[in-house]
Structure formats: C-alpha cells, structure tokens
Image 1: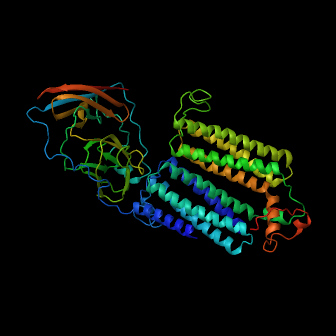
Image 2 (image 1 turned 135 degrees about the vertical axis):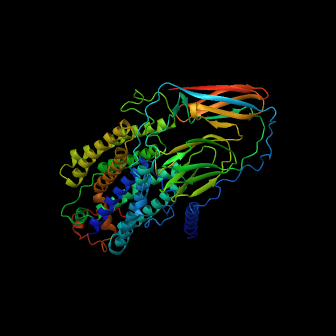
Length: 332
Length: 257
C-alpha cells in the first residue's frame, strides 16, 4: 500500500513538473504577482472565475504544488510511522524538506521577479523531488523487497553500478543546463537544428549561444551514457527483467526527448512541445535513477543485512544464508 | 545546535522578508521621488524658444496585423478594443507610436518636474497609450478600467522593476521613475498581447508621433540637438538639428521595413 501511494505521489510530481513547464512556456510566471496569496486571496479561495489568461497556468501550478506537498507530507508521516528501514524513513524526510524548499523557491522567484539563479534552482530541485519520490516508490515496491528475501543472490555488477550512476548524474547536469537555458531565454539562441547557424559549431558566440550549445552537447553526452548503460544491461543482464524494462523505457524516453528538443527549436518553442520536453527530461532522470537503484540492489540488501536485521521485516535471513552479507552498511 | 538555530532563524527571516515584499497593494510610490533637486521655473527664455516640427514616415509595406487569440479571457473576447496586433500603426504614410525626444544637447539645464500624473490605463484589454513619455520624478498612475484582472509588469534596465496586480476595476497604482531610460517596456503576464513602452527623460522635450506620423517639440532653447526617434520594432534613428532663437525647423524620420 505504501508503494502504491508513493507511486501516486511520484506520478503527481511528474504532473506538477509538466504544469511548471507550462508556466514558463507560456511566460505566465509573474501573472500572479503576489505569493503565497493570489491577488490578495488565499490560494485556496481564489475564485475559479478569475482564473483567466496566464493566471490559469500559474495558479493551477500553485494548487497542484500544494496538493503534491500535502501528499508528500502524508508519505513522510506514513514512512515515519510504519517504515521499519530507517534510511527509507530518511528518504521521506528528505523528500519533505525538498518539497518545502521547492515551495519557498517558487515563492521567492515570484516575489523577486524571476531572478535566474532562483528560477534555475526551482526548476532543478523539482527534478530532485521527482527522483526522490520515485526512489521511495521503488524501494517500497514488492520487487525490491523480494530482493532481500529471494532464494538467489542478486548479482553485484560494479561496472553497471558505476555507469548507471554516471548516467544519472550526467542527465541531471543536462537538466540543470536545460533549466539555465530556459530561464535565461536562450532556448532559441541557436535558431536552427540540427546545425547551428548552418554550421556544426556556431560561428559566433555569446552567453546565450554558449548555454544553448552546451545543452546540445549535453544531450549528446547524456545519450551516449544512456546507450552505454542500456547496452551493458542488454549484453550482460538480459535475463534480469527489472533492469531490461527500465532500459527499454529509457531508450524510448531519450528518443522522445531528443525529438521534443529538436521540435522545440523548429516550432519556435511551441507551448505544449516545450512543456513536454521539460517533463520528459524529468522522466529520463527518474528512469536512470530507478536503473541505478536496481543496479545497486545487491548492495542495499547487504546494508539491510548489516544494519537492520532486527528491524527490517523484509529481511528474513535467506539472504544471509545465500552468502550475500557484505561488509558495507550504513547502520541506518 | 546554535548553528541549527541560527540557520533556522535566518531562513525564517529571509522568508518573512520575502513574503512581506509582496504584502499590500498600496498606492504608494514604489520608488523615492527624484525631483527634489528640480528647479521651480523653466530655465528657457520664452522669447527665444524654438520649435521642431517633424514627421515619421514608413517606407515599405508593413506586415498585415495578425489576429490575436483572446480566448483565454472571456472579458477580453467581449470587450477588447481591437483583436489584431498594433505594431505598425500607419496613417497616410506616417508612422504613429514613435517616441521622439531630445537625446543630447541640453547640457546641464534642469527643468521643473510636472505634478500632473501621466496615466497608463488598462482598457479593453489593451494599454492606453501604447507608447508615451514621462519626466523623471513625474507622478505616474497606472489604472485598471477593465472588469478583469491585470498585472502591470515594468521591465526597466536602470529604474526599478516592479510587478503589481490589479484585480478590481478602478484600481490605481502610483509610482515614479527615478532615472532617465528610453524605453521602459511594460507587459501584462495575464494577457500576453498587452505591451506598452514609456520613454523616461529628464526634460519636457519629447513627443509621440500621432496622426500622419507628425510630432512637435516646443520650447527648446537655441542650440544644436541630437533628436532620436524610437519604434518598438524598427529601432532608433537620430538626427542633428541646430535651432536659432524663435526658429521652427522641420525634421523628418524615415523608417524602412
């Protein structure tokens, strides 16, 4: 039940990111000049009849954000009360702290008229919140729990672990560059695609062109990392469905994301395409995080064994008998 | 522990300060008046004052005005004064909404600051006027004549940026600009088609081209001036004019598409 709820929270976070993408794509971020009120009304009593123009996007974003915040509070409390693994409980606290910080950043960016650093931090932290909720959904899932108690030892592929982490980190850096591009107005600094002003390398440079080009180079590097990770999974772990499935999804998402990125330029930042590009980027990151988590599942099993034999009901001792007890442990 | 308490206090203070920054839809000026040093009387001798009469022409055919999608606000659908873009307003070959002003040549002359407010109205889901001028320190009133919500978002480079919501018909906000700046854009983030520009200058010698693209700059002291004309899409042009006492000289600007 916790897993289903965590999955719901993760899904609602993705919806929130899409709503946030719509706000920036429609340039509606300042259509509601006050915060936390909306034109002097309490956020929850603002009349629907007054949701006109850009207010529809900004105020909807605030309402969805409040809902997600409320759901994350419930999730954190639920984990605190019922989750035996302390490190998972801490993930709940972290998600709660992140979403509160996210809300404050959202308010500050309105009050201070969209300063780039705060807006970029707001956009980047959103993806962390999404990844955290997704992580909680994964580590509370039946499949994850079975790995603690299954009859066979989970393979511990250190190379996969490393490239999966590098891939997730690369995708996140690419997301930060994308957020920087978006909030500095550099989205069309290079107006053509796939070339840049008709060349492979832009013939002229300024700050915006540099940011935009960095995002394109970042896309190439991130795609390369994804291909390396998924290729490794297909070659070495084709029998492990829990790795193959997210790998296939990741390839599909990356293909979609690259297409959306190209279309964003070619359609001169069409609102829907631009917003889908934002949320698909979040989905790519979340999928790399899932893959990285599952690649590390054996190590998590050892952590559970070393640190919480008494308190982890998912751990029934069979893993110990399988000889998978490791020295590592966070004694969480 | 102390560090934690201090961090928490700091966070609370920063957040409170930020929240209070948004408090109150006051009608108080957002900027401190800068007209304290302005003289009470005009330094120009009316017996020698000269005039520039001019016109702004548009060469070429402007693109057809595009239809604007107003459907995001039913009030605007019903009450918009026009439903097409207003970038090029051409009248008998003359280009309207061009801000013309004395850019250089007045030296250290100081001029009285008018106490009559300049008014920017939100009317029929458009700004009225679209292009206008104001003196530094002159009261500036922004009013909402529409029965819908607007936000007035000024995006200056030198003056202070502000963003105010006006949810009620008849609501007014007063402010002043503290330093010269040509031009300061305004936009409504609720209604993306709403844009306006103000030229903030330190003297009274500015005008906006009207019918036939004509304009007039009156009461100038004799001298040599750089006159600049600004259009929202076509950029700027400058001309140098030398005026003798009581002289009236024509100046013509010719923008090309």
